[in-house]
Image (cartoon, rainbow, N blue to C red; front, side, top):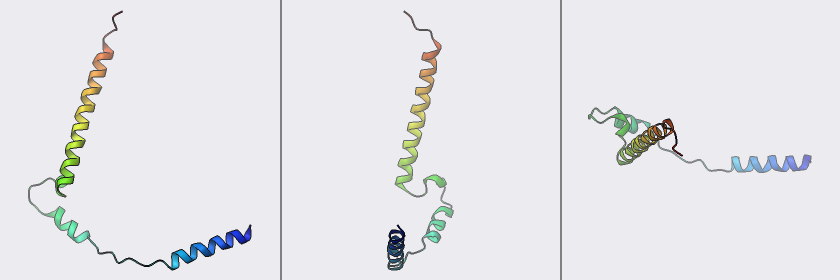
Length: 82
């Protein structure tokens, strides 16, 4: 069993040490400029079309869910007729 653990340790060390480093560009300053710009657009819509679609989808689901919940409450408040 000790040999298995030692082999596993060697494999894990090799994969970590031999992995190449990716050079990632820091995009935070660009995003800060985008979201701090005063252009009259609400902050939750500043990232573009994807944000607008996600916002409208969320609002639609919320309105539909609220209406359906109210419908079920009204339906449950009246007794069933036999």
